[in-house]
Length: 287
Length: 287
Image (tube, rainbow over all chains, first blue to last red; front, side):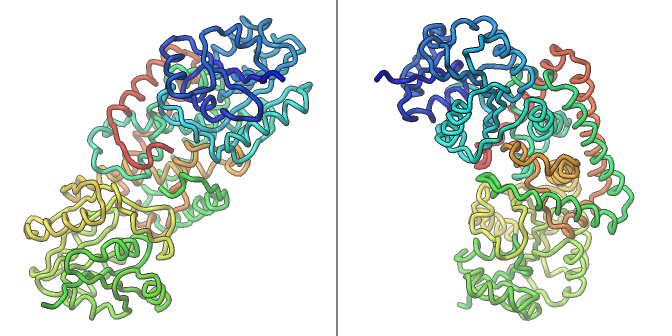
């Protein structure tokens, strides 16, 4: 029996990590697809995937599963350009942080190709295959947005893939709900981080920063084209979240300025209690 | 020769961690001082310090170094109440996140007691001796605010203590500068965290949070009395930082709403570059 293959298009931080972490998954061979020979060479040298190639079309034609690990706008273009190249009956997915625009773009595919959106909630502030990590997805939520006619066996396959990656769970939702919530849990965190770093005091604070500062600003060193696209493709939801945040910040600002410690204490108790109710254990909670 | 002693007043998260981490420092014995017998019992049972006692006055009288690891307002009261109890010639310090009010309160001490403010930039979102960690201070900045007449040998002693704790460096500054910068690097991070958690969407986002969300909101589960006091004692600096943050958030909000991707990309590039210039490596940077 011939080996099945997983094609990973785009060997950057996430694609590279997938290619590392999916090696050995069931009876699949992992084929990395890159645009630059240097990336292919790096992948071959460091065992990122089982094979690596520049030949996108050949890779798509043999792939039983294709992961598109490129920027959102590139995914839209890629789907249109390669619509006829995907293997009939195959599963195509992506890994990007926006789902509405991607699911819309996937409508260009022929009906015998099943597209299910994916968003593994993992990453670091670095880019590129050199920063790929085998354990990148350990403990992460893996969100999927199937179409109404997505095949159950493909959803089950994604669930096994996510489990193999070490993900905590698979969350099945709609593109609309995904984008509304991700504006808050992910995109807004990045806007906060860059806004904090825009403070003129940034460079004078060296020697005075602790883990709360590093935790909040870590993601400010972001991949600019990627996040420009993610923000722009979700602008209404994101600006709504920011408006809400500014209201809550202003509210704290006023109560701190008022000097009313009793009110401040009561307000902090409510917020801290909300956070404790969230109870989000994770490997990064202790630092 | 008699052993010298370090008294640690208050065996909470930080005091407990100090009592754990300072064991074996030079020829000092570490004596924990608590208000409740249960804390003393816990300390003795878990080796938090070499000894533990309820008798504050006796501990202060024999201590060559005293760490006050209690809330800011309690430090102010404690210094006034115990001004005559500290051993003449001894070094007294604290660990709290505000220095102006503490240095002012230390003026109550007799001239033969040397008070130097300390702020080890470490902690977790937990409270209490059960969460104390031996490696709490690994890689942290240790900030000191000596008085004009502080003895050089005591500054040197704090530097050795900080090195023994595993701190990255000792930053010597004024109370005014400390409080101005800490408003930005620490207090504002806590206001951001609680403000994010005040969003009505908090509880619907379970399953959609990644490391950026956890990194930003981790400290929202804060010690309410402690942070009420820290915010109140530094209100002008903190409100100034919040005003500045809101300006930068608004600026991102407007540019995202405008749909001008070129401008958004240029702005993100500036912020991301600022963050990269900060270059703050730390053990928590990879998650």
